[in-house]
Structures are given as structure tokens and as C-alpha cells.
Image (cartoon, rainbow, N blue to C red; front, side, top):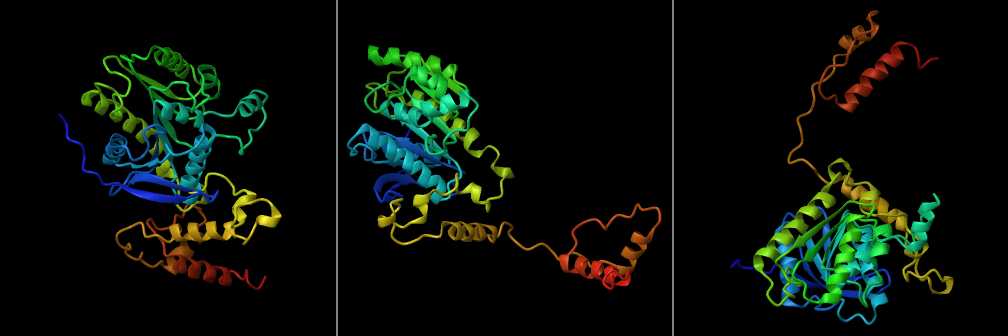
Length: 353
């Protein structure tokens, strides 16, 4: 048997734009990889030992992982809205450049629905029209859905999944699913995933029951669960880290997925003029945040100062009629280069002209 990693997480509170406070179990490993994973479990909730164990397993792989308390939320619509707002908050306000979502059973169906475009957006795309940012899915980098099924939490269906899925998705299914209604739904969803218009992967664990990877099954095997979570980690690593090496971390787009909306500029978050309250200068806040990132030291020590330029050498080179002069290799100090070019400028009489 394999031993569980020692818990490193803690229960935290997050204040959302809507002023709602979300309680969550959060694990932040030292030297975490880029990206944060949101685990959706509206049935067992964040306080379940098996749920927290999954969070810690994900954190062991190097990713931050957060499981919000969804079990106490009143309705299915409230659950979807809360998770969507939480994803936007992590991406736009907390500097998480890549956010991914992971769900089991009902949580998997919820995760899939979050990754689907609205019917209106799908229809607009078919007509060649631009989609509405307000109706689009939250800015997710990837999704992993374990044994999803249509239920009261989600309105996702095989047809909608095939046409509207907008996020790279890994679907994990249990071959020994004994709940026949859910098994038939799962088979249809697995087929739909394979026909979706984005990158997907379907993984079937033939000898495992429903709940094998999150402690929800009657005989969930640790080997199958570990293998399945390993698939998840590789999937998230592929999609959460791709291309980030070419992005400047100080650009506003790396910590805010979309332009601010009207409600962002007011402390109350309300568009109603009478309830707006204090004005919030989002533009200045983003500028200050970008400047702070730009000023962060990215090297362990300052490189040596480059050697000075020879004015005579440069003038002779520029005056060479063969026109094949190249500047000295290596770095050039900017003040030194400005001084040389200014002298040439004055010497040629350009200033007087």
C-alpha cells in the first residue's frame, strides 16, 4: 500500500467581487508550478478527508490546488456561478496566469459545463460573429473530469459537449461502473468528448469502480487512483505551462484575462449609480502591479558592466565607404552609446541644421 503525503494545506477564506466569502481548502507547495487547480466536489465538500487527500496528491506534483466549499451552496445555479466567479478571481485579481478545473462525478459534470461555450456563442461562431465575453466560459487552461454524468448540478449533455466544449479536456471513466443509468450516460459523454472540437483525451480504467480515484468507490484501488491522478498531472502540466516561457510576466494580460468591466471600477461592484460607492482606479492598480512585476529581480547577481566604446573606432567604421562596419559584439552600455552618437551628431553639424 502507498502512504498518503502529509497534509500541507489549510482552510482559507476568499472574498469575491460579489462580496461573497468562499471557504476553501488550499495547498500551496513550495516552488509551485505555474497554474492553480480548482477541485469541484459539491457532494462531499472541501472538509472530506478523501477530498483533501486528492488536493494534497495534486500539490505533491507541484501544483497549487484549491477546493472551495460547494456542499453548503443552496442551488445548482449558485454553484455554477460561484465557481465561475472564483476562476475569474484567481485569474484576474490574484495573478494566477493559468487556472484549471478538476471534478469527480457531479463535480465533473459541473467542470465540463464551465468549459462549454453558451449556446448563443456557439450559434454566433457558426455565423462568423464575435462571441460575447460576458457569456463565455471562464478563462480556463484545462479540465479533467472523472466519471461525469448528467445530474441536478449540471445541464451538460453529450450533444452540448460535442458542439460547445471550448477547453482542452481529459475524461476519466471507470469500466466497472455499477450504476447502470450513470454508466450509460458516461459512455455517451465519453463518445462526445472524442468528437469535440478541442483537444481531448479519454482514459478508461477497465477494472475500476466509480469513485476509484477520489475515495468514493466501494473498492477503489490505490494503484488505479494513483495512475489516474498521474494522467491528470501530465494533462495539466501540458496545458498550464505551455507557452508561458515566451510571455513577459509583467504584461497586464498575464494576470488579467480580459479588460475590466464597469462593475470593477466601483467599490460596491454595482453598476447601479446609486449603489456604486467609492471609485476604484483599476487602470492605475494594474499599472502599479505590472510595474512591481517589471522591477522584480530575475537574476541572482548583476552582470558585469560592458567595456566602453572607442569613439575613434566608431567614426572610422561609419566613414568606411565599403559600408560593412558592424558594432562591437556583446552588450553596450546605453549612456556610452548615447554619448558617442551625440558626438557624431554634433560633429556632422546636424544640430545646427
